Amino acid sequence: MPGEDGPGVMESALVNAIRENAIEIFLLAPTLPVTVFLRRSLGFRVLKPWVIYLGFLIFNTFLWFSLARGAAVGNQTELFILFAADVAFLALSIYWRYTAWGIIKRGELWHTRSRGVSYLGFLPFTEEKIQRFVEPAICFVLGVVLLKFLTVMGIWLMLSGMALLVLEQLIYDAKLNAMLDQYDGIIDAKVAADNADYFSGKAKDKAPSISDASGVSVFVAPELHEMIAKRKAEKAARAMQPPA
Image 1: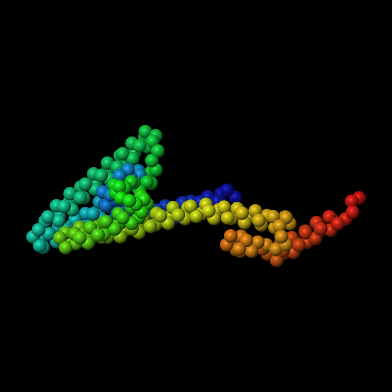
Image 2: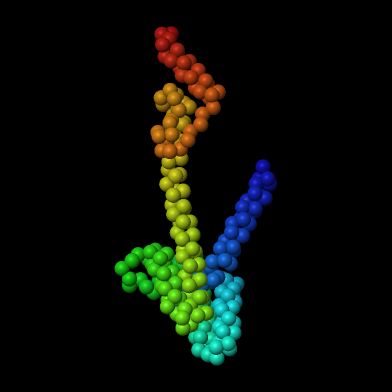
């Protein structure tokens, strides 16, 4: 009944929303402070206000660590660098969000979940390889280089690089799975057609094997086997009867 389907649909939507928000909390927000420096034209829904704010809070956590470390060693250079990066991150996030909203208002086409276009596009790699591997590697290596001189900033870059690597891999897997679902759908349609031929008696006497079904395990109940065999026998008997 239609009324019985509603809660299931709502629960599915709720689960998807929780999963999406969990990814944004644990991966998108921590990586956003480096992403805005690495890419342009980020999508509108990537730059949700609460994600920007959470990324800002995470960045400020490292800022407070830098303040404490600077007070201990008597040098606040790292604090000023991190503070400047913090302000720049906030300004760039707001700028790209308003830019993305302007694109929507003008009716131009740009995906609202776009992860942006890398500034490193001049490198001899595809955009997908740059976002998945090159950018995280640059963050991590730069963090290692700065670790001795700007310890807190180095740690932040290393952690951001690792989180960015995981996030981009999850996004890649999701896109790949969507494409493979379409590929499997073609196979499922072929198997369904073969099964229909088998059930109608147009195909061979046994159900398609797993090799014939492109790796799909086909189960046919014994009762169906008997019914199909009986139907074929009746059809053969009618064919052998002389015309009236």
